Image (cartoon, rainbow, N blue to C red):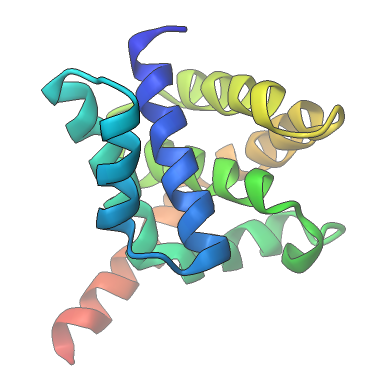
Length: 150
C-alpha cells in the first residue's frame, strides 16, 4: 500500500470511529498511530484530513445529499459516507490533492473497506461532485465566515 494511502486509511478509520461512536478524534488518531507506524509527515497528513473534515461534516453531507439525491445520507453506509467526505475535502477544500487522485484514492479505499458495489457508487458520486467543486468551496467558505462572526 502506498504511504499516502496508508495515511488516508488511518484517517478513514478515525472518521468512521468518530462518526459511529462519538469517540474523541484526537484519542482515536493517537490509538491508530500507536498501532500503525507512520512517518511524521504522513501522520500529519492523516491529521489534516481528520480535522479538516470534522468541522465541516454537515456542509459536506448536505453537498453530497444535494448531488446524490437518490441516495439519502442515512442510507449510505457509514464507511462510504466517510470516504466521500474525505475525497470531497481533499479535492474541493484542501485542494492539495488533484481531483483525479482524490477520486482514485477514494475508489481504492472503497474497494478495501466497502461493499462490492461501493467502488462504483463512490466513483459515481464523486464524478458528479467534481463538476461542482467551486460551489463546494463556496459552501465551506460561507461556513467559515459564519463561524468567525459568532
